[in-house]
Image (cartoon, rainbow, N blue to C red; front, side):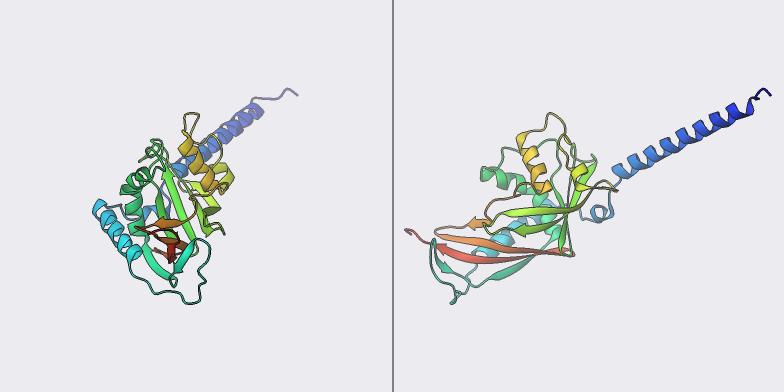
Length: 244
């Protein structure tokens, strides 16, 4: 018996269905990758005036007179230590500062020449015990790569981020996929490469978390604790040894 055309038509129909299914899956993945995740969509737009007011408020906290810690032993480089004190920073203010004041602040301290052109300024949203941190590739409205991470301070005072989950847009992916080498492209500069290394948890995001003030005073950050909508920061004011 000679086979008729029906088997061939069935195979062709099956192939078409598979092709349409794959095309649909790819389209869904692309749409998810380009969409904005809920945590970022609900974040307030950064405001330049709010960023400046926030910076002034932080300076007032840093320079405020603090009570001495009578249990602290003056030794090493520290001649005087305050009681630990805390401040609560809203993530609205943090986003405004990151968008409008991070770059000039880092330039003034020689930490970078300019913010990498291929990245937007960071978007940060606080949640219980974790931070959502994202940057858009190519600046807005480029696709948003992001991680959910736990901040921690090591014994040497350096700030590290431990990635928990990651994603591109609304597409959730393993952190090692999102933060892989070559993500930005072959033209990425050294500053961008270092930032990606920090987001992977392979190097500190910042060195010793000590903020120098006038004279011999400085503020040491002791702990960072994220909560929904805010970041609790515990600090200590110190007076270093040396000539006045």
